[in-house]
Length: 369
Image 1: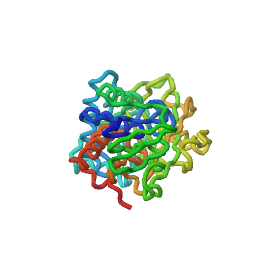
Image 2: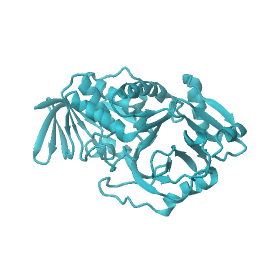
Image 3: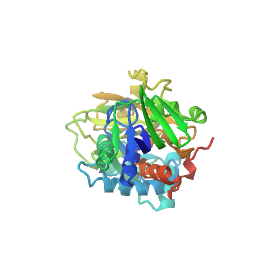
Image 4: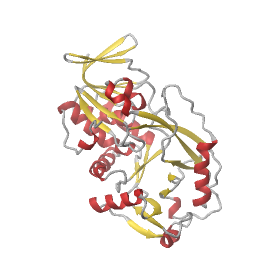
């Protein structure tokens, strides 16, 4: 059988691409070297933040607005995907991230509240704010439930006729006169177009020019216990972040017995081989988040109950690569902030695979080195 499109990698982006392709009527196959969900790549560990006042680059905001619509549509399937519980980001107003949030909210008319340090202390009593902090609260922000999102895209793709092949490693990809040949062991698959969404493994299948600009890094995530006798407040049920000189720290409300999930948004040690790297965490990775808790949170103990290792595949400018190249749709380099976009990236991948163009404003994400 010759597929219209083969999708390599069934994580956040690949599963979404398979869903949108199958929904459009394409004969699509999606391949993943693991079972889905899994904890080997970038799409795991309970939750991901989603927000629209986007400090990274205001060009992302139109994509986020469409992503919100698509996540909401996908929630018609069983299982909650998107929880709008709000997010506050605190820090000194003149810091780059804080200014980026304000600039995006102003440019795209994203409603936010700007609280003084005193107002933030009254509203979110479980946190410590410096006297010169401001606190920006985005009520329509929240979090996505990672496994539910992955399974919603993939299972719905399968219901719409997609072929899903888990535990199938694509060893090589070669271009032919009428499409592509994918080899997995002794088995060959043919497709007219391919979508490469293999995360930290994508560079193994892409043309050489992509390899220098895709750099996988390990990133730790941690869970900490709440202090039982501390009173509940709005700050215990929202997502939160602090933009500090030490880094951008973020967290979620407690969702399980593991405790409160928190992390430092910062790429760690570079990964040479994503299939075989040391996932053991060290104290120099744990201590910054523990110190953050001691300095800023009053309702969490700095004692780790669970930890995990995620992968950021970074680009030099920390923006994604979403492009079409000689019949290949490339979804790569999501640099630790891509998951929230998966629903719209899937729609864009469908457009590029079937027509070679998309109505979405993605020129700033094309290959640019």
